[in-house]
Image (cartoon, rainbow, N blue to C red; front, side):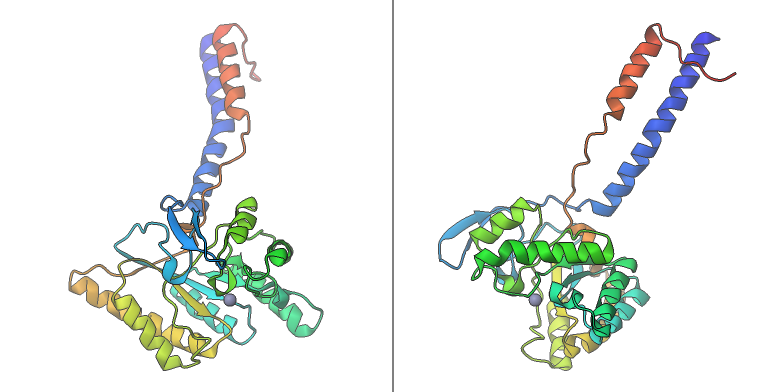
Length: 305
Ligand SMILES: [Zn+2]
């Protein structure tokens, strides 16, 4: 009886301690795990012209990205907001389709006491509450490589603003203009902030033309192989209005692909690029092992009768 009671006590202890920990682990994995390894080796020239090795994602045409896990997959990202006109329309379109995107926000839009400033902070909270990822795009959108002495403040001030506004510290960064250099790489590495680039960019800031944005996206996505990271600006009306047209086209295109037995484009979310962070050691596994060894030896665990 005593042995049976000891075993029952051990099982109860295991369930109490390990099961929540395992469930917590699984949930965290689901939320944070990238679908592929995050490192790559490549070479890029910084603004001074010297070739430097790096192991974080790059930008624009230089971007090789994390490996994709589907033949054709697409991640949506929106830069430079929040914008009181464009962002709510984008949120509505994403939400009604169940798509989760990344919003790289600029911190200057989250400061101030005017009604529109307060409304923008509410909007960022809404972005986060609807399950999208709010990420860091600096305070004032400078070229970080032309202003290396500003890098830390530009990143850290925006991180604090986003954390104060949403309750969550940003896990990703995007460098304005895709600027990349050794000093920025070091500044980001110290903060464990991955720099997320893009490879589908209709340059909506240059041509504020809805039809041109739509045609560009359709053309690029028709040819997509592997992972596409789409860059749009919620601050430009051409992208805001081209987005629902593009998503409607994508849904029809995917139906056509399935009928023709081609690979459809899978819209993925930010989990694909958020790196897995190791959990801090809790000491619980060691404690349970020690207790189990004791129980098997001579120490009984007393349960209430
Ligand atoms: Zn930008």
